[in-house]
Length: 117
Image (tube, rainbow, N blue to C red):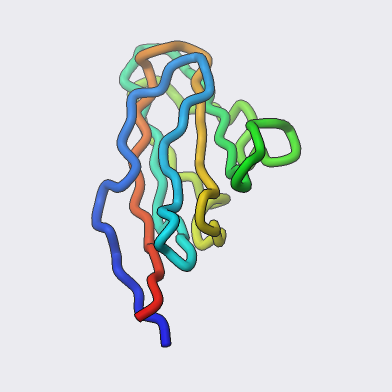
């Protein structure tokens, strides 16, 4: 029998740079994880873009695992990323992201991790 443990909010919390960086990795002890909410906030005075990847264990960021491609985030505003919600990630899988301008976009989110009892 499995039980779920919500790791709380935010599990993902980062200021994005222009290089792809890892935001979250499913723990080896978890059965699976599912993002529940992901939000990107633009703190700059210009429209910026974000790219987000959901990557299988042992793989790398590439077009085949890109969930969000150059999504525009208007100046001084936020957007939710529904493409990630309830996507199942297995142990060792991870989420990466990058922005078109370093220091302009913050990303936050919560993850529901499932563990076997």
